Length: 252
Image (cartoon, rainbow, N blue to C red; front, side, top):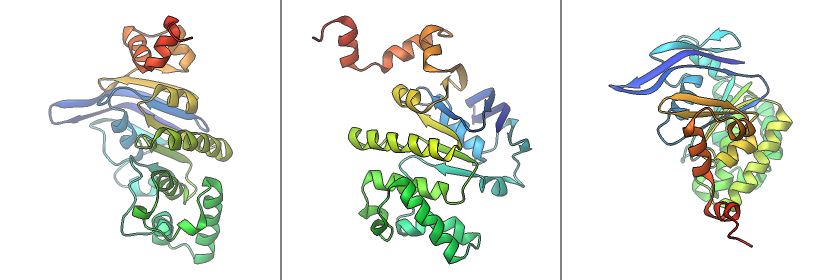
């Protein structure tokens, strides 16, 4: 569904992404993972056209993403940014319906779609008229997800959507997100720094380092056939101290 060929991006003299090829399969969840500054968020922003590549091309369903058609193609993409990115002066309802109103949807259509999304994300309808500051972190992320899904996009892009949440809320939202992905059958690209989260969501995991793709595949591929020493180091670094004790036989 999404084809990136030779895309590269630099900021000044610093390369954020070396020439990179990546294909995102329709109906699957692809997870971009790697250490901070590895280029995963840059790659996501190139996919949606928020930044332009210095070289290479991005295509959605065979249509090259250009400056001229970026706005049109973005209507086929939903985007969830880090920390939700909600407009503080708009209510939850106003945030979710913003683009639909901009595109001229009538009120019955907006109301029907809003009801569908509230049910899908298990967001309380009495929370729709609250402002972001009046919502919990988990509720703000649900609103951000509803906003991304409002236009029923073909492609859903999420940039570390759960990174700022406490562990219990994060666990609940992980479960709900995977249910939503499976229910809708959409093509998903998700950025995370957490290997367990990548394995939970990803049909395909793409590990990055220093602006390039090191290995792609399933978690089992990474464990059984690491492409190089960095892959093994990354896997080991993701183990919690509790897991390391278990492996060492130090926890009864």
